[in-house]
Image (cartoon, rainbow, N blue to C red; front, side, top):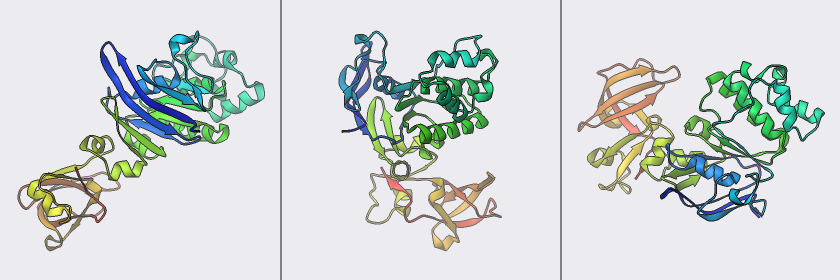
Length: 326
C-alpha cells in the first residue's frame, strides 16, 4: 500500500482544466517536489491532495484512506495531512505563545521541543505584528506541526524569503523532518530549491504530468526543452551546429541538441569545434564565456580556466555524458 496515492486526478473550474489525469505515488519519508511554470497546476494539485479542492475525476488516498471531497465535510482537509499555503495568515496583535497554545495537541513539553526545532522559542513573547516574514512563516509551520501531521504539503515555502531566512527554513525543515518522521510534498519554481532537496521531481506542463524522476535525471536528461528550462541554463544547437557535437549515431538533422553551459569543454582549436571567444564574465567560482563557432553558431559555456580573453582561438567539445537530443 502506497503512503500517498494520487490516481487520474483532473480538475476543471469555469470551463478550464487545471489538471489532466495526473497520477503518482509517494513512499513514506520520500521527499517529492512539484515543478512547472506559473499556471501549470502545481498549487491546484497540492490543494487536491490536501482535501481542500474537489477534483473533477480521480481520487487521492492517504495511508489507504480516501481523501474526501471538501464539499462533503464541515471542515475541509484530512487527518494526518497539513498544508502550508503561500497565503498563510496569523491572528494579528496576539502573542506568539497565544497563537500556538490554541493549536497545541502535543502538550507543553513536546511543544517546547518543537518550538526549538522550528527556531521560534525566543519569539514566544512577541506579538505577531512584530515579526519578520520568515519568522511568521516558521510560526505558521509550527502551528501546523502541533497537530502531529504525517504528510506536510508546502506551497512555495521559500519564494518570499531573503537568503538568510531561506537557509534557516531549510535547516528547520531538515531537522523537523528527521525528528518528527515527516514526509514532504513541496511546490517550488526555483531549481536550486528542488534539485538539491528532492528525492524525486514531478514536472507539470499545462496541467499534465510530462516527466518525473530523480533530480539528476531531469537535469541531465529532460524530456523536452520545457523541462530543461525549468532547471537551469542551456544552449540550443540545430542543424549543422548540432551535428558538429552530436555523436554520429545520434546525429539526426531533425533534432536539436541541448547542452548545459558546464558540459562544454575548452581546449586548443584542433581539439574540438574551432571557435573564437567573444566575451568573458567572472562569477566567482567560475567564468562564463561566449564563443562564436565555425559556421556562425554561438554558445555560452562555464569554465574554471583563468586568463581566458576575448579574441582567443579555442576548440569546443561536449563532455562525454553531456548534451541531449530533443
